[in-house]
Image (tube, rainbow, N blue to C red; front, side):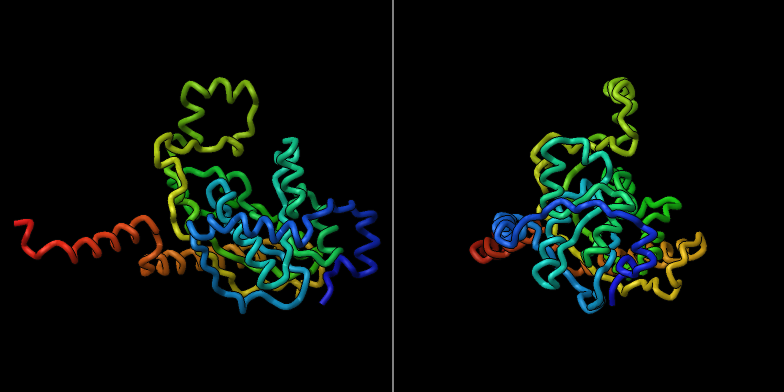
Length: 299
């Protein structure tokens, strides 16, 4: 079923939409997928809930933003593209587009500046959108905030879904928040020697990143990544009406689905012997060595 963005009345009301930047070719995507092979082997991503992804297009994927957001998002992108033929176009924080080189790389792989106009253009083209309502606040959260949805009272994504009458696919991501040990969070940086510099540069508070511990633990920990797609949240029953009441209902339903899926993924991880690759390898090595050590030799 087409998005309301293609309906003549809405399309006329939106006016001239921006031209979306060109994206990577299928050959480029295949090369990049191959380059990510070692990372797939390290993090062993697992996905479930595929039956919850509707066949209609476009869709709005809404999830929790994990720490930094660069470890697990590519796996989500590639898996949806290869399995469902969905090329996700993510709405990025405006700050990304102020960085030469980085903004071109993001654009090449589908990201756009997170404006209503760009979102409308994606839906009008039949493309599916990825959004993290927590934004930079979730990407740069403290260890005490692991897997919390820091959405405050934001309704932006819900309003977009209502306006364009698209179905939301909530999803949960678990694992990336434990990949790095954090030495200094945002609060510690602001209170420390760098606080004056941060203030002088007028860095946006939610863009102050936590710093990983400068030791061997600063390397990514081989923590397994888990993804779960939740039952869809429909918006067409609202008839394109964008009200605070409708947006709040859509947001709260989406948020509850993600939080419930995160709880389920925590339980799944607790029962997974391969959740932490380093511990699994250590156990297997220990089991192997025990075969060569006579019982009672340590007494």
